[in-house]
Amino acid sequence: MKKQALLDHFTCNLNPEFRGWVGAEVETHFVDSTGRPISLSCSQEIFRGLERFGWKVSVKKSDLITELKRDEEKILYLDKNDKYQIYDLKAKKSFTLPDLPDLLNLSWYSASNHLLITQNPPAGGLISIIESDGTNKMTVFTGKFENGPPAGGVFPHPSATSLIILTTLTQQEGSLPNLYSVNLK
Image 1 (tube, helix red, strand yellow):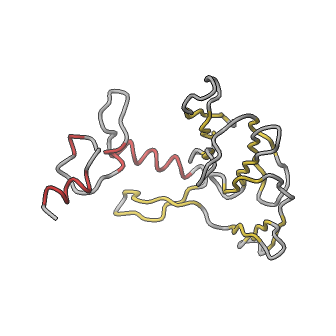
Image 2 (cartoon, rainbow, N blue to C red):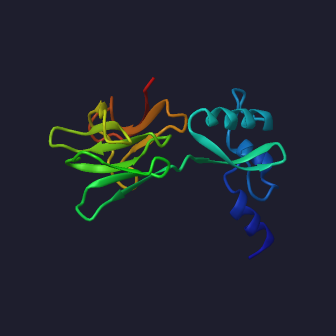
């Protein structure tokens, strides 16, 4: 592979100011209100803010946060009886989730205390959040949304304050879907 082709492989579609770099940092992918790449201090402030929402620092280089991950204290699995189970590693307890008819997708919400459920009952789409012990199921959205793989058109925001839904909420039938944010606070 030629040098330019290799460089393009790693830098194609990045901010043109940084095309000479191999690889990319978060600062090259996000821009401020003026359209310029965010500063290193801004990205570090964002990372520190995400810690308040269940994200943990997994890698630091000197004082810089370079990688975050979710708290992994609970395991979601399907048992031999086709029942969804949550095993809490810290409490050493297992919880059975209620039956979830017409299930499209079940995934962790942005922190490991809740699960995001998408269902497709005959009357239309249903998005709910349930606590990881299987209690307090709350419907947060009913209506049409894209339900194709892998995530069913519903994505939790990393800050755990909203959901991003791919839908044709206010458009005519046959229109391409848009992303909508549903605030949960």
